[in-house]
Length: 306
Length: 282
Image (cartoon, rainbow over all chains, first blue to last red; front, side, top):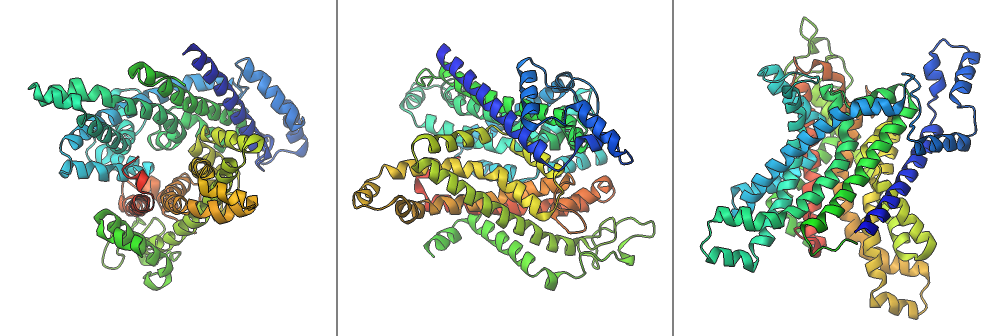
């Protein structure tokens, strides 16, 4: 187990290094020029050249990348071009908001998914079962920003139950979390359903039934714990997906997380921030998968850690 | 033919097929069906206060903030979505096939390197990468297609890799090899045809992903640029107005959802038919 974790951590480090290299090369190969962006439209060629020298952009690309890597190894993500502050600090300041949104969104997904999935498994072929199967497709086919705008229109503009945008109170988190949760719940329900159907056909469940246990007890004590595994694996993958898509939801709801930070940085060609957020997102994806792989054998001893 | 017959018997696949056919008809027949030119900023397309008009007999789905007919713009937007869907996804599937088949067939350093690279791309936040690339390049229809292709090939490569690994072990490949067939012959005459079902399934499912990605990029203002209509940029243009004119978000949103849903349903049905071992899996 310890060996596994060490090996996976080394792998994680290598993957992050690769992500850093590709992002870096892509960003600096693109035609957008950060120095010109900072200098403004009316700047002279001399000013632009000065800024370029100041930021180290006049160095050869490989030298720049080497400097950047040395920084990362010391936990230093560089300084923002536009905001003149430490990128690590900027991201850390925004991270709690994004984590709250992620936790709330995944909570809605899991709760809705569990309820619908269990009902669908118990009433196989029934109306709710068919609805769940359809909902999983609608969920992956619906554009997040449209659902976000429609929820805003119904619950914020028309009914006035929740605030339009912003951050601070519990009411602010409801609509963004619902947007993420409603769209994702269908796939969780699908996973729960198929896992539950597998388990419900097992002999030990039939034995439990034969002993005269109530079906609620059979589902909650005997079947559900064994169906949890795919859900945990899915949460791990979900964390990664969420970090990739966070820009859109945060943009619509004005949520002050790292997605919004990235979106502002993209518009200002603030490359250190873009690099930082990309690395943090990649880290989340890798850690999410790692988490799923590490927790699985703890819950189900039949799975040996590879 | 057998595939089509099987699909017509499943209600959800049939529904998907009908909508897909409708969208294709919309795109092809846009100039014939559209009551107005999509770029025509009509004088009577705005209220006296200059606000967009709600759906009416004259403007079936209402007008947008510039007084253009929303129905006509949606029809022409179907062209944008389908062109990007076919081009971007076609390229993605082609890259995925190439990388997957090569890394699965070539053992050793090259194959390993290709697969490590694919693993690396799996760890990339795809949507974020697409947003960054699209924003920093000068956005146009073709750039958007390229960006989408660049982030979407990874999944195909992964699946093709696994399938190729399985195929290489099979007896008929061994037999072919002992008959003296070259690598190219084995790859293209014997392995590639077996990968076609996978390519067709992912070619269909991928269009749904692509339509959504294009809509998202255009919604952020970094996709297809107005005045060329795309379902995403129609919402982008009317975003600040949506409280007063919700139809400007609702109709394009519904069209995006229905299109993506249909391609997903058709792709899923195709997977069940072409690859029975995958039936019922996520």
